[in-house]
Length: 610
Image 1 (tube, rainbow, N blue to C red):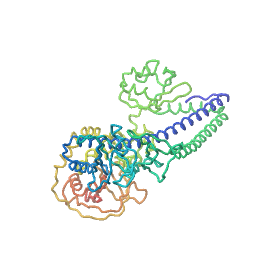
Image 2: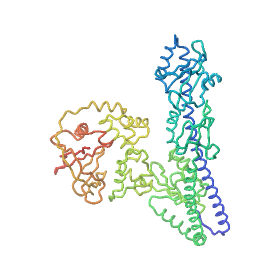
Image 3: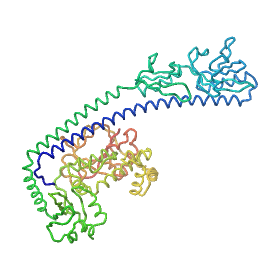
Image 4: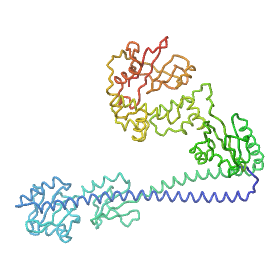
């Protein structure tokens, strides 16, 4: 805690100016970053659609080339066999029709019922001459298809057959291309066009019949291997709406931040003369309060850890030299890993084990000194009165056991205690560290699911709170000395043949106060219920106010424990085998509990039927 001294106002205003400049630069940077991100998103959409069209076009080129090679290599004897082959090829292709023209004037089409017009010769057609002149596979200029009665284009390639040269084509009407193109409207809510070099529209996602390529709101990209272009309408609404929203939100945020900054600092300008005296008193109060605690030792050092004062002359061997850091690093009473961890973290509260005793070390900065308070917490007991805090934490853990993000920070916040105090209370209450308790609870759920379901091991691991199946398998094998699959095989062989004595009943809402500790069960009032969850036993009693859990009105199986004549574990295994349906319970474990008679013996076991 630094000592506050009197300052004049010039440095304050200088720092305030630098702060405002920083806010402006930060806003400008964020604004530019957002704008670039939107631009990259739009370009990404363009690239994706273009790639799809390129791939579609390339696939058509490949199909035509394959069919040309197949026709040339086929041992065709006459025109009829060629006609049959083209018919079969068309049925197995994406082309509505196939055509082939020879220089001799002969013309063939895959449609057997199509009648070629009188005096029709392919050598006078653009598609024929363009393909022969190019000497390679091309996309033709748009033409009117006699076969379909529609404007079309063809993928055409030169071919040699029957000792003559010609052109083989796969025809695609504009309508087919446009339907394919419309599939990409969901990617982009603005106008998209596919046009040829003459400006004729081949496909579109809009009702517009024309496009002005000189409009700066449009951008075009060439399609690979063709004279086509994909044309996009730029989406200015993305920029205006997103950037305006960003401007307003940041204006409010930065304005509020500047207001708070100036308000707090102006308040400091008026009060700083009193602060020196108040901070001095506060430091003395903290020092006195810390020193007066039982089983505590206080030592003060400068910034280099040279000891400036100490309450005891001797404290193990860590006061032997003049430098506290060197003393701790050289201490024979502290483990090596504890030494390194002590100086590698900058937390105010740390635990340090010295000669088998656990000390809570509190670090306090006062003026130019650093104070360390060592408190013996080895024998500190949790408070004896029952307030239900840890039961609420344990209930949260079990309700959210499949959440792999449960950690000390989250659970300490639920308890309302600091992390270090919560850890001590938790271990005192459960006899386990938090990490061990969480792992054990998750493994118990996994053990149940392996025994009574056919779900995959990976899903069981996930539903039991494990992010990775490898870590689950290692933990399970370490705990039960069996792999998950071996445990499942073993449990499936253990068949209980004894008959259950039971009846099906309806139960109204049951409000329960609960505790996980048998010692705290004495604080519960009313009829007693013993809830069973995996391998845990939860103590409950009926209550009419502020229940910890509520068992909703539903159908239950009531098993007569005494008549069945088995121990509790075997009866539960039999109950789950008979009544548990993994899908019906939606991956959860059914509610099960038992009651006792006046002789403190189990009389009935109840299980909820989904």
